Length: 180
Image (cartoon, rainbow, N blue to C red; front, side, top):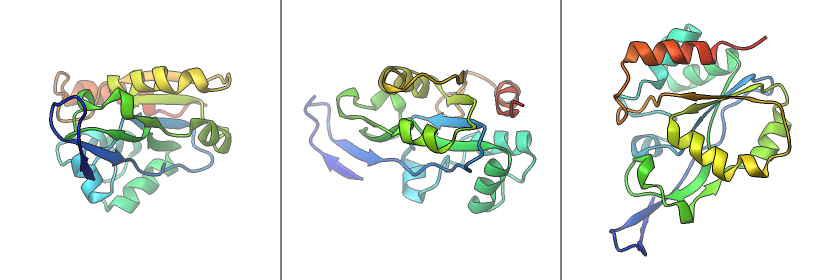
């Protein structure tokens, strides 16, 4: 992460770049975040913040150990038909908060190529409101018509504690249940 001058005068901004997707070719569900947070970027791992509820929720839904090593957790997602990615390939954002993403400096991922390479996808789940709004504003208008179900989910981020773990788990369980 490289600090850069922020033209808004609000202080330094940091240009960040996300990760490659984790997806088996036969994935049926795609979970999208907005952009990895600082802890994830430092560790080069999706949802690395220890208080993020993503891995405990996915583990309960898909039946794997949330403490398993990272490679095993990624494999468990793929075995469950779940792909993982972010809406943004790059952006400028100080810190980890989605609210701080500079709209004038964001670059969406290449969803046209991704969807072409993963033709069995039927559902896109958004991990939080910012991922959903970024996708709908910066990605969806550029996509060719494709029948996909979109599901807005409560964020698993520790910054979004409005819903209890149990409530999040119930909603996420329904969303991550692979459609037939």
